[in-house]
Length: 300
Image (tube, rainbow, N blue to C red):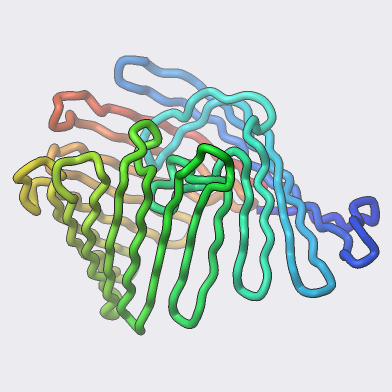
């Protein structure tokens, strides 16, 4: 991705503050997709971002950003079309301050929850590290807002342990939730285990899995409980095979419902890549999950 950096005296804030750096970046996408029940359609999407950063003489850094988003795009990770958007970012911009290994982010529209980043918790986030311990905290200063979340992570050689909790895992219900996970690396193989109490399902979701790399191939498999009362590990499972070599990458994944996902992309260089995505099958609730898309992404 190319970035144009401009240093300008027009953005000098005080005599004791260095001139700000302004970077411009963005993405564009052209795609054709076919969604079960909606049929085929052509979509275009553009996302432009302006990031502004600076530094004080004492080493403190600060940053903020604004953006423009228009159109509709294929979300390959979720195998869906993102909602139609248009115009400048409606949310209040976040402002970040960093000093001596710690950072503070303030956002009047809410900061990402550390357990579930699909929702927001409070309006201030603090993060940093002490030795091998990584710490994150979000909290509210706004009157009437009690949302907060916490994350802790510690690495000891090949072993990593993490914990996250929140009182706002579901933005509507505001449920308490916690997630404990552990991973262990053995050469090209990684073992993982987690217990996720989302505050909504009857029981915590317990999951164990592994991934291993063999040259250009990566194989992954996991088994888990569903969170329903009495569910056992293995009621939910996922298997995948991924290939990556040079400009080409591709993957195939399936699960206990035999819903199969195929993804492929080819890097054209210069920030452009073509992609293909397909999902086929019916989930356990009987919903048809068919989706397919092909398109090209540009980054600058």
